[in-house]
Image (cartoon, rainbow, N blue to C red; front, side, top):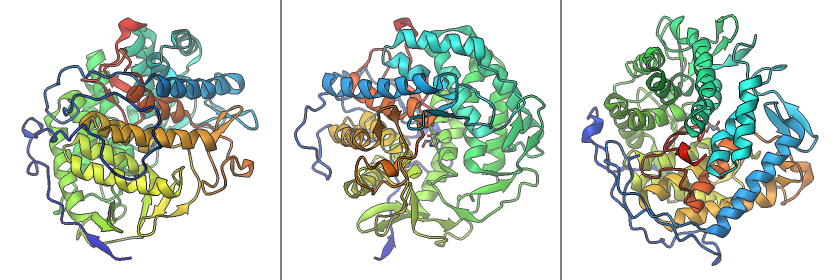
Length: 507
Ligand code: DMJ
């Protein structure tokens, strides 16, 4: 299979242009298009978003309220599965980070012997959006009484920010319970030493929440940048600029080290400021949400600098990394100094979020093409494997970790284009997950997505916390048309937390 670089016309504004001058994506036809993975005619999805780009497109004015009519049957099925998973967590792991639904045991996500009630924090705003108010109150009560942000535990800053700080902020915005904002702030205060102790401002990877001791001086880009949304919102809600200042200083330190091609490497030494490698693996992990937070952070915080950086870096990724293989759009790894291919033809499932991100940044055509590439993988493997060889679509890592990225992109592209196709794809994805990953105690990861559906030997016995934050939230928002979410201005973080657009008056 030949892999050819794609000379993509850039839909973006010129490098370093500001967000306010970025144009919104062209609204695509809201008609359903004739692409692959068509479901048989099921009850489908009457909703549209009026064919307009949303405020997610940088600098765009918010359009009129979309008239989202619910597909009640699909929405009810989604909610039923969410509650099935939630009951599974409650039964075996309430108060612990994560449930192992088959062995009926628990998993400490951040540090052995410590719990932060991760799944409770992850679930908060999804439960709110689904109208599960008694559960929301129960979760808030648990957090008020038991959540401990000063444990003697070494934690990864990236995970604490996107999961816990973000979850508490979303929960606060849904409920207006002051304790949730207070906990988010206490936690962020405990994370700040990782930024302030660093000579470059780029955070160490880990901090001890009790002692403030830091460790991990080689950080991947996602670990450095995926805090601007949470810290920016926290600064806004508290009037304390320290959080957002720390984020911006870290971002500036990385971006000032970009190559002449406007590409970045993967990991950097936060003490010396030297790159630890010379490969741009974008949009794959572990750099994925570094780019996501430039775009979404720029829009959430109306920060033209973040948006401008996003446009500059994205133009370079599209120019140097986009390739066509088998007629489909993929992204190759390159040497960030020369743009030459560097590394295997691997694509991680985690990169599937990039289809939606491209759309949100204005590159709707490329986002849509990349989404189609992942849809082609789903035609072979109804549950996406963790990684594939993009020249053959063969799985490399066959495990399936209940990932939300494909549904995330479907949601984003649906909001931007109003195209029913994205809802149909998302629902097909949902049905495959239900067929293959549902167990009596909830939902579980798989060891091998190519094993026959229901093959017990393939079950990997974990419901990841993010399943409660992300997977079914995207589906619910697409099918329910809930009035609890303002579809014009709502914004989700990389962990699916609604950091804007929740309507607390509904609680
Ligand atoms: C989530 O924790 C976040 O979306 C993160 O940015 C990467 N992906 C996982 C879930 O797959």
